[in-house]
Image (cartoon, rainbow, N blue to C red; front, side, top):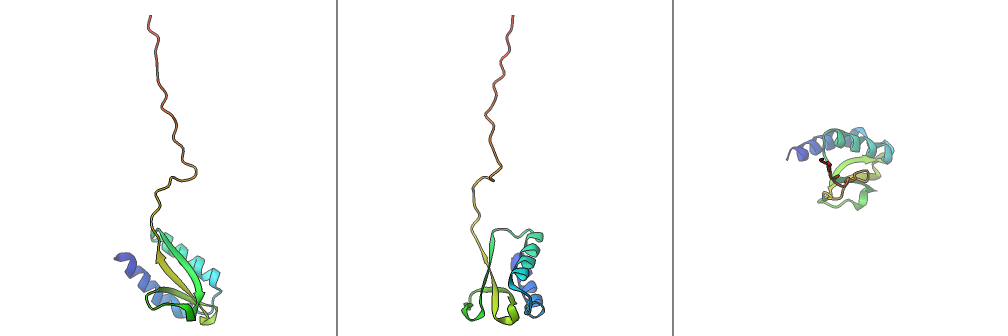
Length: 97
């Protein structure tokens, strides 16, 4: 619920202030703010303003109001990070005399 409140507040503050900004620049700024708030598993999509659906979560407008940035949650992935590796267990044997 806190993330919804954060997004709502951010939406109100960003709509008018960023309407004239280039879309990719605004999208990058929004993504950074969401990441800074530890919000994960989301996507931001730039669409023409006339294609926005009523149920969409709009988090910004750009290109003079011609385009809209929509927020949506994405499912968490369970895959391992690319740099993760599992080392095989090493057995220790000791020779006793």
